[in-house]
Length: 82
Image 1: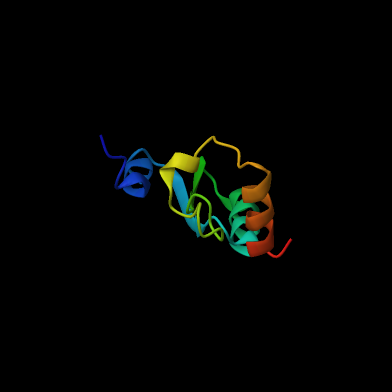
Image 2 (image 1 turned 90 degrees about the vertical axis):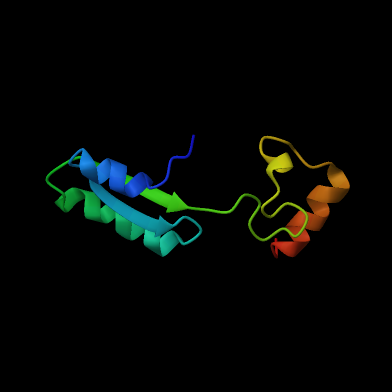
């Protein structure tokens, strides 16, 4: 069963809804700051992509909850610029 349209569902129950790019720290910080000014419960919906920035992990459901081996870890860190 799909959750979409998630934001509309929260709004239907009277919640304040803030939607952000979950990979953007500035958007996340802004959303968290905005909660202080909301006069009702707030739901922050952070849109993200599993494995963002790692070619062999990005968008691959198989990596959800799975740890890479040493070689994969090295490649992932290299791609992330770590």
